[in-house]
Image (cartoon, rainbow, N blue to C red; front, side, top):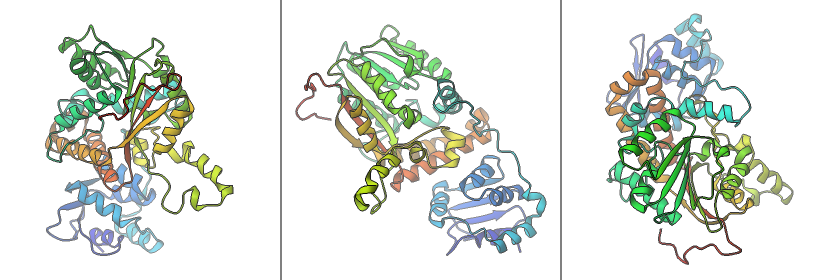
Amino acid sequence: MALAPLLADLVNGQLPIGIEAYDGSRAGPEDAEATLVVASPEAVGRVVLRPGELGVARAYVAGEIDLEGDVFALLEFAADAGHLRFDAPMLAKLVRETGLQALRPRPAPAEEARLRGGLHTRARDRAAVTHHYDVSNRFYRLVLGESMTYSCAVFTDVEESLEDAQANKYELISRKLGLAPGMRLLDVGCGWGGMLLHAARTHGVRGVGVTLSHQQEELATKRIAEAGLTDRIEIRLQDYRDVYDGPFDAISSIGMFEHVGRARMLEYFGRLYDLLPPGGRLLNHAISRPGEPPGSGPWARTRANVRRVAAAAGSRTRSKIHSDFIQRYVFPDGELHEVGIVVSMLQEVGFEVRHVESLREHYALTLRRWVANLEARWDEAVAEVGPGRARVWRLYMAASALGFERNDLHVDQVLAVRPDRGRSDMPLRPAF
């Protein structure tokens, strides 16, 4: 039996995509908007030996599988199809079709992270950040656009440009923090300096940005010099745990919290609390995970289970990013937390949480723009970072966009204040 029809049998129902195989066979509609191309027998071996997303991802990163056409249509099909049916008869057919040689274990692609040391120690955190961010500043510019902003934008409508939507995000955060001329702002995980540039130009603040990425520190410093703001903004290659020169009037943490980890959450928020004066504000912008599925939360269980459920919701195992591919290729050691846990931990260290806003749909729009940027300049991206790395970013960004659209991923802004003997110094009805 030819390979493409055999692979089509792995899923139930009508096949909405095309499948092409190295043996010349094809399955699925001729006019399919997306096609899965199995370029070598080794791809089948990877998937059989490691069923699920990791086997497929490794084959794709290695170039043994290709995704032609609409990558979102392919991923939507994969999500709807569920697990592939690798039962004994199917395995026997695949072995006969591809040969035992194809089923030999193969090393993972070079793009897979291999971190060592204790989880969320300084050295390991630096290695995780280096793996993800020290790829190539030029590559990130191809993907992110001129704003060089690697976090969820805020759109006023779906037609708004990505650059304007990123400026909207920085302005929204500035308003939530109440930034005003002369204030001192700390941006934790400052990236390429976008928030600090906006805050200095638009609101007249002085700022400090910290990052663990050498390439981010280098380019952010250059961008600030080109803007003529070196006397007002300082970029440091520094761990948040080593910042001691407070107080800062306000702190922003945008897309960095995912790297902190549940075990360090109280330490993280406690450090930021200590860097603020009474009345100082913190804006934490982070991807989060949904809460318990309907009917499975603590109120659906016996009273005796409530403490156990609450503890499990905050554990490192539960909060870890639930994707082997993302963990190994994109955000090693990344952890996502339900927003209620974040609110509780902020208040545990002394903050008063004043405002929570979900931007879930905005991140889906942002990611689709990034995927379009990457695909439009694919050859340049491959020349810059290699085909494997470009494939990683295409797959992870497209899959993440669908995650936000399907309510499997959230992103929230949480505004907190360090109260002053009961006073928050917040307006009665903030105009955010």
